Amino acid sequence: MPENFENKENSEEVFEEKEIPSEKFLEILGSEKFLKALTISGQETLKSGYETVFRVNILDNGDADIVDVIRGGTDRIHPGTLEASTTIDGYENVGKKQGVLLGFHFHPEIKGEEIIEPSQIDLEGLKHHAFIGIGQIGETGIDILLARKKRGISNSEIEENAEEYEKEVSERGFISKQEELQEILDNNGFEGIIISYKKKGEEYKLIQKSRKRILGIGKIKVNMEEGF
Image (cartoon, rainbow, N blue to C red):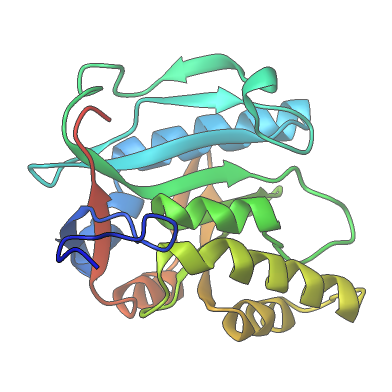
C-alpha cells in the first residue's frame, strides 16, 4: 500500500480548532447581541408558531458574530421554508475564517409538554456545530437545551449515534421528565444541560444557576473554516 494512501470512505475531515473557554461562552450567552437575537427569535416563534433559527459564529479573533434571525416552518427548519430574515450583525464577516459555536432554534411551545426534545436531525447538526441549542419560550421566560457530542466522539459517529438516540426515544414512548431525555442523550454519545432566562419586563436575564452550569462546561473546541 502506498505510504500516503488514504481511505477516504473512513477518513475524518480535519479542521483547524479554536478553543473557547466556558467563561467566554457565558459572556456570549449573556451579551446584548445574543439577547437581542434571542428576544427577536423567541417573540417571532411565540407570535407565529413557527420555528426560528440563528447561529453564533466565532471569528478568528475570538469575537462572536450573529448574521441574522430567520423564520422557518411550523416544525422544521429547511431551505424551502426560510424567510423573514432580521439582521443582527449583517454580512460583513461572511467569507472570513470562522466556526459555529452554537446553532440555535426555537421549538414552538406545546401546552402540556415540559421537556425540550432534540430530533435526530438536530443532533446531526453537531457535525458542524460545537453546540446545538433548542429553546422553548413561555410567558415567564425561556428554557434552552444546550447539547454537544461527548469528548472522544468523532464527527463520523454522530449520524449513527443520532439514529440510535431517536430509536431509544421511540422505544421509551412518552417521556415526561427532562432528566430522562438527557439520560438518553448520554446513552448515545451526547451530553446536554438546561439553561433558563427569566423575563423581567421586556428583557430576559440568565438565572444564576444557569451561569454556574455554563461555567461547568469547560473548554469548547470550535471547528474553523475559511470562506464560511
